[in-house]
Amino acid sequence: MLGNQEDIVKLIQNDDRMMEIINAASKLNLPDWWICAGFIRSKIWDTLQGFEKRTNTPDVDVIYFDDKNIDEKTEKKLEAELRTILPNIPWSVKNEARMHVINDIPPYISSEDAISKFPETATALGVKIDKDNNLNLTAPCGIDDVINLELKPTPYFKDSKERAEIYEERIIKKNWKAIWHKIKVHHI
Image (cartoon, rainbow, N blue to C red):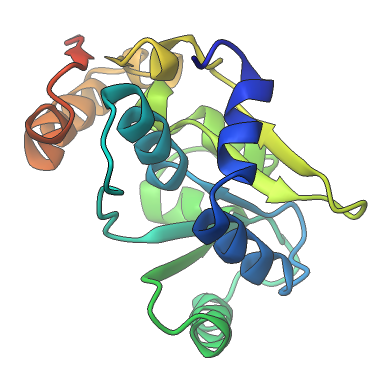
């Protein structure tokens, strides 16, 4: 069913609502931008579980990397702009050039670097439309875990006790197993 990145790209391309959201985000022309995390993971897991109805996602994460302007107010303006395009979407826009300050970690070098350091491999995914109107998927930790319904920490979250605790707390808080009962949760 879903065996490689191409299959995931096709799955997203065939979802009119997802493409509408991706196209809206592309209108911002942000540097090094991606829609990431649960937006993609949920679609994959919904499909693999055979859900007829889309799982509700609490937000649509749009990230970008602009080290020339790290003002949080810019992110809020971008969210407002997206709400004028698609008002019923719970937009969340974050400049990854700023997030290391919030997360108290070394700076990221790009959006893909930030995605690689998300807590779970299954959420370490991003999708965007490139300048040639092609849909691109990035999966710096690979796609095996997400397509095999496995929840595992990214290497970055295995590396420290503090991050491992954050990963474990997210498992409890997010309660993914209650939504997607077939997933296998791996603990650190």
